[in-house]
Image 1: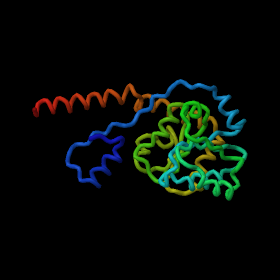
Image 2 (image 1 turned 90 degrees about the vertical axis):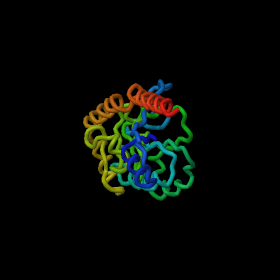
Image 3 (image 1 turned 180 degrees about the vertical axis):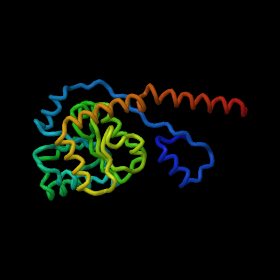
Image 4 (image 1 turned 120 degrees about the vertical axis):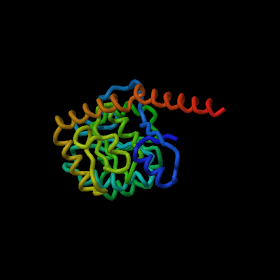
Length: 231
């Protein structure tokens, strides 16, 4: 049995009363070469000098898209950013919130994106407002492109992001707290870049295919050796 985080390991043991060892092997991300330049992608999205905030998810209720939109509505000044949502689900139910919060000129939605690397390399900040995540691959994907994320300190996220080192973690599901964290990075590009570099280094050192795949291979060899002895 394997899990992608210590958090998920503990939850599995707690909820399922598993009495066998559970190996923690984190997720990895192996980005493909980008197909378009950063400038081309940003131009296509209508982003000029604004900070590009990126959110990528399947839009399930746990992802708290309502909180995502409430958060960006509280960022000041509004002209300082654009939120790009890579939607792996139907965004239609959230359009009324976009209108209610007067975000029509701040939010850009792209559905079922395949060349995610193009958007990752064009982003400046990732924003994840989920109630909880077992790991959060979206954060890791951004890290690989030196894009620091703001996320909630919950689930397996603290195993991925070092708060204040490779990203920023918010303790509660509070739109104002998320907005202030985002604002701090919008206003401080030097710190934003430093967090991004640290995030990229962390992704390479802890969550690359070169690090994670051998752990799976070692596990398979161990399991096969155990099965061989049993037979």
